[in-house]
Length: 293
Image 1 (cartoon, rainbow, N blue to C red):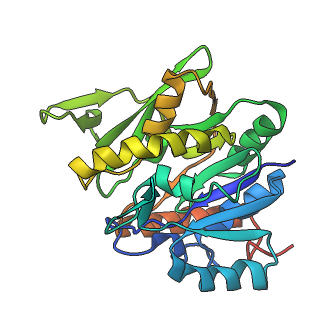
Image 2 (cartoon, one colour):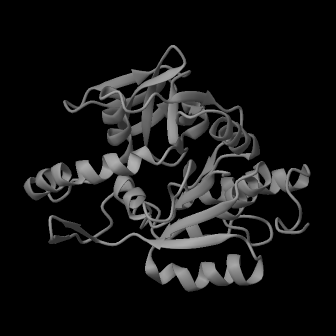
């Protein structure tokens, strides 16, 4: 069975000020997710599952299923969790680990998880696909941190540490910025901590096996208990991955991509992303329009 592409597309884009996953950035009206799906299908992925807000389904169904005939299905990330026959509701989606859990009934074999609003590049999908069809363990496709920063504000990134080619842990660093002196993030005491410029970070490009769903199911009860003490808490994937490594459930191969990353954290990132995507079309990396055969 060929692996599936699973796309996290239900985010609210609070810092961006709108649904950036639907923003047209390509020269022919392409959205970033178009490139990822096209690249994944080209690499060999057999099917695609999009985790979305319910209101997005008519737009994306028309775009992908009706017009392009791509093998795509949808999962809604709800704002409630049922645990032990009790329903818990939240004012917004519960985080990336919860989004993944919502797709548990759609995934049957190995799969690659990505963000809808990050451009990963063709070779990144090839790296992930080749690993998922050859090996039984998961993988993480990672980027050098300098490729992932914004000129228009701070970003959050999952710093990863490697041991013998495998992921040792993944630590969320918040409010990372680049200055003339280097790359920094504030610690809880407000002190600026410098990150090496060759630091590798996860941009949520994970090749997983279905074992993660069993883990999420079991951990959900503990998360709900913590959430009841702090309702701002989110169920985030980097924390889940680290916990699975610590418990010996996962041994994750780290694959470093040489591709260019393109993303839009802020509205002011948009123009640069448009220029970068247009350059790729002009170089012949992508057709004009993207979906042209």
